[in-house]
Length: 310
Image (cartoon, rainbow, N blue to C red; front, side, top):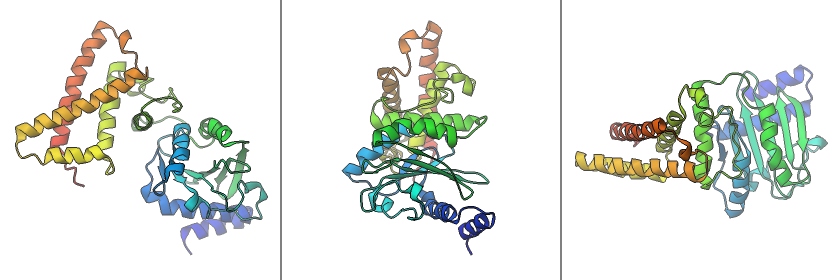
């Protein structure tokens, strides 16, 4: 008997509704399959998306705000159509069988995992979400349209599945970098949700820094985060730079590449009015110049010293 089967049996022995216990167990099996591909704090598609899927994914990506320990799988119709609750659970029937379903499965780790299963297809009769923990349906939220569901997701998720209590420094950093990663993906901040109380860019005291230090923490962490992503095209560019045999030329190429990326991030912060550079004091302007040079040197050294082939 595997672990999930044991959990289902335990829940039923405790008097939980067997229908709900088995359905949550089924969702946990799905989560177990996709977990190797998940990135905490990010919404990740479980398979390549077609053009129509990308439209729905982009709408969900902007709307779904995740605390950094949550995993979230975006499940397009090819798979979501097979993830169907038992007909005996009438309250969980959200979309007619055979119609294209779009699901998101969000998991909060812990002694008892909390799971949120979202149906947001425009074809759903009842788009919305269901919350499960320990074989119990804790609650459901029903909406009239896909857009209504998307508009209410962040508020609902923050109440029911976000990490409660104090966050660590690394969690504040991860949350802010993940948020900024969405801004880079879309090329603009419109519609991308953020909680300014836990973003260190908006609240620099979270990292015990000034607003200039917060800016450079964000853009250097963003650069390093993208370097670690095997699917990032510019990781290949860095590998090409590292293959340059002449060390002086390698350093020159690395410096140019890093400066180009940091300037891109800074320009996006400026054009989206995420940072009001024109309000900097003279001291902050001087600090900005110093931090830019320092960040560039540090990243060049990091790129030169790090084996990016793995």
